[in-house]
Length: 248
Image 1 (tube, one colour):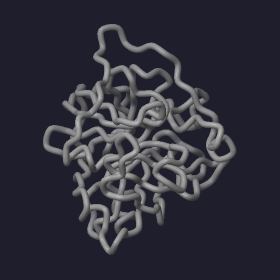
Image 2 (cartoon, one colour; image 1 turned 90 degrees about the vertical axis):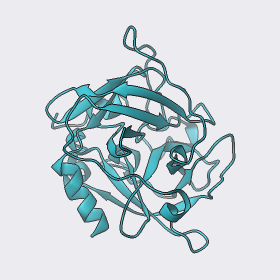
Image 3 (cartoon, rainbow, N blue to C red; image 1 turned 30 degrees about the vertical axis):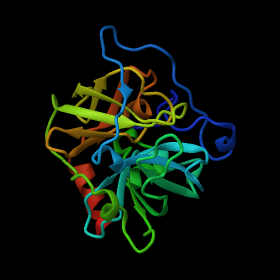
Image 4 (tube, one colour; image 1 turned 135 degrees about the vertical axis):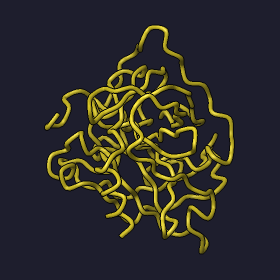
């Protein structure tokens, strides 16, 4: 997996983003017998997850992101392909809206100030490094983690974890969620099977039972080319090194 996947990703697919993002699509179908995601009921933990959109909360959507613990209390995690590609460069004008639901922005909209990706992603869109940390600016003198809290990053935890995955399909104004168990796609990529993860859900956090983010939809096939199977880079030293760079 040294080169960019040929198949489409789960980033935004709207006319307004066509000039900014690679055209993307997702085929229908999934794994036989796999569960299907349901509408995520509001909770403080889920309000740490939100939309990445262009300029405003109601603007064209790019992906999903979530707040993670950091020393400056201003950090998100998402997939690298959500915020940068070799052809497009960095995507400008992004804002993060935690807890977005049916047009409501209960915690405000937070401007993206900086994006940290691995140099190997920046150089070649290498799916082994499809993770990004995103720094957002304060709103009303508060940092985003002060407003909604954050989850720790969990690395080196292996496969077979029970996780909940919450994200925002572009066609919905409410997030979806599913409980699933991770499995190995390769030594450095993992997967879970659950239907409903369509365009916009790239970057959705995989939250383990102890509240740690142990993956984000991305990596192999930029997160998956059907809505029934999703992938992530295995959260290991690659991710802990990138986190240290983002918070250093």
